Length: 71
Image 1 (cartoon, one colour):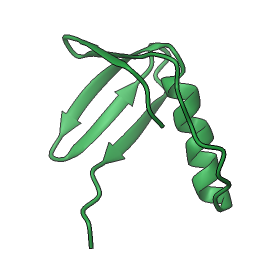
Image 2 (spheres, one colour):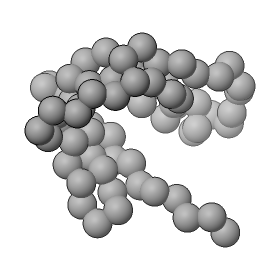
Image 3 (cartoon, one colour):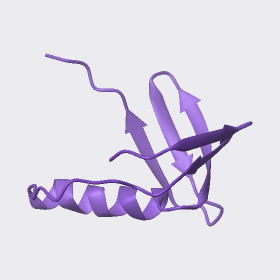
Image 4 (cartoon, one colour):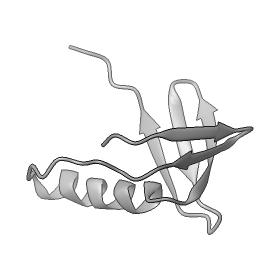
């Protein structure tokens, strides 16, 4: 994914998403669809917590993102 992001207080708004058309295994594709649906042009609230970021919609749907570390 890539998109322009606007931050305003604890709010996060993503512009139009750009994605690849690569196919992944079922679990990764399901997560990609969920994340794309959440990021798709709606305002979100971002809550950081010790290396994790929770993005929440106004309807209470959310996704937890963590930073991966290279092996």
